[in-house]
Length: 280
Image (tube, rainbow, N blue to C red):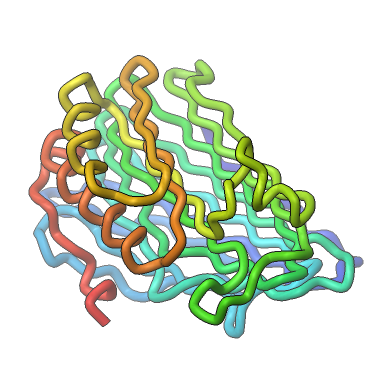
């Protein structure tokens, strides 16, 4: 499947940003072979703390995202290449006067490719209006670990998301067959407190990994023991889905990183190597 650049409309109320990255295997190293960008989305230079895998940090718009901004990220990982992508810090979505912010992320993994998509959290300020879509296309032997963490409001400041909207969707395809189609909608303050919604928790996170088996599911179940907020793990064929709620960011982030470290040797085939930016 070939990535196509998006058309940038001429009459818009906010930033229009597009970033397209292609990773290829060259000898014993993965290189950033293709890079195209438009607007305030860019990357830092690649790092190689563990040899072949390419560690890359994505830089989001300075100061955060406001209503009307549209960000499009397209990531391609070629055959037998391995890329780990993260961000230097949280992405902030500010109050909107009405227009919706849109973030579209598309990932395409070729045969034998490995991708770790590990951005830091998205913080939605009260009044933010965000549509966030993430789509992953895998081949039969592609390997993936990806996560997303959303903070509705700023719990550290006791600031609740009492107004605003969130629409988030995950789609995962393997060999062009839909494996996961999951959405989260927060349309009013009541959705935060409904038992069938977020049950009063301001943080919601999802982690997916593939290929996995019952062994990985039981491993994650053990890691979830003692976590005080609602959490669960599901195995759909070879796709592992971990869903977490949280009251505070630090323990949630620590748990997600612990799960990633435990899964990486079997799912990706490498021992855990933390991105250096997480230590700052």
